[in-house]
Every structure is written in structure tokens, then in C-alpha cells.
Length: 321
Image (cartoon, rainbow, N blue to C red):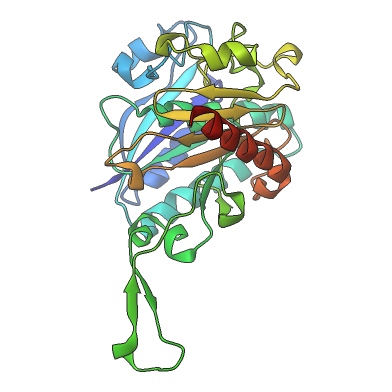
């Protein structure tokens, strides 16, 4: 099954000079990366979703309005179908970085304007996005950091994640004494058992400071709100503002995810059982806004907030019981 990449660019390719971007696409095409629905929207084009013929469900999170409301923002979309092997994965990653490095580093405005966003999806895009993926929509958040178990048997990749762990008796080197035990995945909220892993170099995305709806500013209201349709939409195409960068810690609960919004990051985790869950991230940390160009592991910078999250979740469990 081919892996699928979604490539989105926001106001990035000047209308009079798309050649660099097209050359980048052509170079990937020469290395077994095929494209569908490549589209460069013009200033006078219609709504991006309608112009490229995307099903509205593709842009519709489960618990709220569309991710891209009507606006003047130009969106370029491509589907990249790539054979799911390490060689092709590395090809796309390397080509993406080369494209970014080709932009003059001294001109931060131009770099921000023309940066490329590449989102990796396991397998093929489902007819409707999973609710957790509606929260963890990489292209709308600055540099996502997926949290994967620190146990190397889990963290290397999807193919190794479900492999059993071979353990050997300390008193014998005989292969007959080896025991095969299924690996135990740590809880998503146990940060010490996880390490950060950048899935891709993502830039040019929006600040999560403006992703909570203004009506959901009271934590008590969030806790009491049981109407799925009125739950906050975390990922909306909106500009950041000082008003949205609140110091308060907000807990958000959806039908299949829960999240914590702080001044510095959004943490989301899946809560519902799903047959496809092993193929998808179970937890994601999105930091804002100072790591726009910084793609190193930032998970340890927020240990104190994670500890508060664990205490809060433990308190919720005791209250519910």
C-alpha cells in the first residue's frame, strides 16, 4: 500500500514565479513520487476546496465547522502517493529540506511566505478524518511533535511497532531459553516513557493561539458542555492575536480525544478505542510559537505542564468514580 503525503502551501508560491516549486515537484516525480490534483490557486480563483474538487468531508472535522472557512487565503494542494519504504520516505524528506534551504535565509518574510508544508499520513486518506486527526492536523499547527514510546521496539516505525520483544534468561545464552513477550505500550500521559519524534519538517503554519473558539474561555463551561457540535474546533484557519494567547490552562474533551491548551502548547491524545489506532498517533504535542523554525525535540521543555495534566486527569478519574 502506498503511503500518502498531503502537501499544502499557504500563500507561498508567487503567481509570477512558481518555477522553483514546479521543479521540486518534477524532481520528486523522477524518483517514483506520483502526484494527483496538483493545483496552484490564482488570486481570482474560487474557494480552494471547491476549486480543486475536494470532498467537503476532507476538510470537515468531526465536531465542528470546516477547517478552512471562506477567506482570501490562497491554498495550493497536492496529493503525493509514495511507495511505503524507507528509500522513498527519505527522498521526500530530503527534497523538502533542499527546497526550504533554497530559499534565501536572510529574508525571513520571504521564507515564511514560501515555506512548504508536507504532512505524512499512514496508508490512504480515510473518507472522513478521524476525530483525533482533526485535532492533530499537522498543517494547521507550528511544527508538530508526535510522542512515541521511548522503548525502541515501539518507536522505530510502524512496521516494528507491533513486533514482540525477545528477552533472554540472564543465566543462559541458549536461544531455547529466550522468551517472547508482547511489548507493553506506556500510557499516553506518562511523558517519561515517551520520546519526541518529528515526523516531518513543517513550517509556515499557523499559531495555535487563535485556534480555540472565543466562546470556550471558561473552563467550567468546557467541562459541562456535552453537545459534540459545540465543542471547540482546535484547528481553524485564523490569524493569531494577543487576545487568544491566554495564560489559563484549558481542558478540552471530544468524543474520541481530549486535549490541554496552555499558553505554550496544545497536547492532544486519543481516548476512544479504534481498530486502526496502532497505525495512527495516539498523542501529539504542538508547541507555539517560538519554535517555528526550530524542529528539535521540545517535549522535555513542558514536563511541568504534563505533570499538571497527569494530576488533573487523575483527579477527573477519582471524581468520576
